[in-house]
Image 1 (cartoon, rainbow, N blue to C red):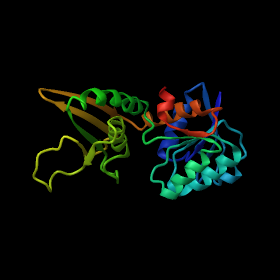
Image 2: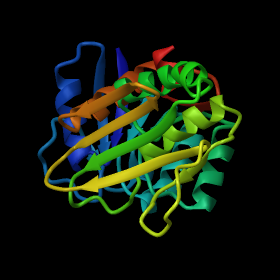
Image 3: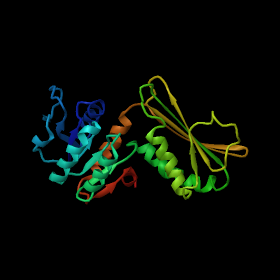
Image 4: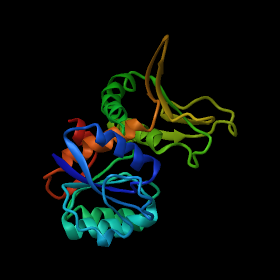
Length: 251
């Protein structure tokens, strides 16, 4: 049994993960951390992470950037592996994550979905064959109308996966409206759509002469990210200090 602390337990993702773990016989939440304990959870909840004395094998974090510094201090002090899912960290915080990884296992990923992380792996192989053959590459991502950033971090991660495989020879192009010119062979186009309640859709298009190959991923609920975080927590149990990502989880 893997024992986890849920950091940000009363948020949408915290409650999603709480429900998923309740149905999983291999893992349990032994404590939660949140700004307010409203009594909705079956496990003890601490409003101050420093007050948590419950022993655990890993911590899953879906909170806010402002809470990450105290979180990292706690995990380092307790030698507790951390699945870090909070986004929007500052450069200073990212540096602190790297420092923490010298003492504990830290898993951080742009997207916790197992499907997206498998796609990152598959795109490297596809790029080696198709990009080398001269196929143009475009990424289209779609999200709900409340999402603040564009393009999505996942779209950039997909682009980076391709670009790294191709020795970083591609230039990302986000907007073609201001320039009248033909598409460059080393352009990688990234387009963003915002509307409705779309959880997350990503299409990676390899367009060649007379044929098109498209890799697609659709997230129909936030549960896909929770499932990935749970698998990550199981993976981190007993791991030595270092930086990990979802590629390590899927093998």
